[in-house]
Image (cartoon, rainbow, N blue to C red; front, side):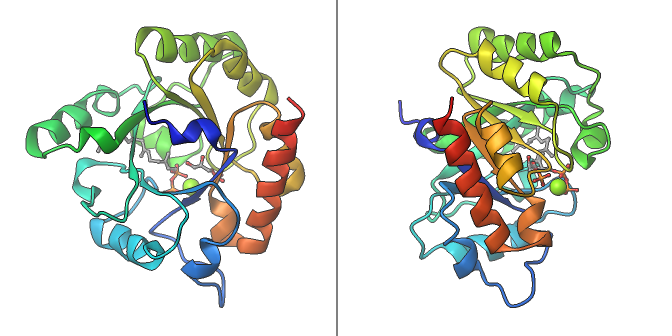
Length: 236
Ligand SMILES: CC(C)=CCC/C(C)=C/CC/C(C)=C/CC/C(C)=C/COP(=O)(O)OP(=O)(O)O
Ligand SMILES: O=P(O)(O)OC[C@@H](O)CO
Ligand SMILES: [Mg+2]
């Protein structure tokens, strides 16, 4: 099976609804040293905004993935290496577990060879994604570990994603998910602002995802997190 994420340490998540910092371009964004770019966000994403980011990155070598937040924003474009489609395990609204997916499969022709799901465990109740999906964020480390095992062993998920979008997560819960997995790749995302944050989560996950930092502070700050994630992982 083709699982490029098995070799990743760092992913840069570009929100198509957010601006870059002054003077920075998508050429700069593609040169941070990240292993892949994921394009996605919860609020106010449209297929046109998605296309703008894909177009700006298409000539670069960095792998490009779309992370659609609903079926309407999925873009068919050869510049994409694939689609990473969230499934929110602890959603209160089943639409975000299988409902949107069922609709997508019903109305669209899916390129299965380029489509992989990400089993999300959403843990920051303040995040838009928690609100949208009505996620139950009250999860102990044991709960998180159990969700990770459900994802890998029962649902056959290749990617498990501990999501703290907007805030740095509880390292113990991230480590619990990591320890629970045998084969699946653990993504950690949320509140990574600098080398130390990335190092901390790099020690406890397989792939550190950095999002808002790009839009708030820019590519230099992102580059430091690439280093931190790699160094943290090397210490595992
Ligand atoms: C079936 C298809 C094609 C899509 C459905 C996919 C699902 C289940 C989406 C629900 C979860 C979701 C919206 C994921 C998008 C990625 C994500 C978590 C982005 C982070 O968003 P936030 O940081 O909460 O939002 P903003 O930055 O937009 O405020
Ligand atoms: O924006 P931040 O807080 O870096 O979170 C990254 C990512 O996990 C969001 O889906
Ligand atoms: Mg966000």
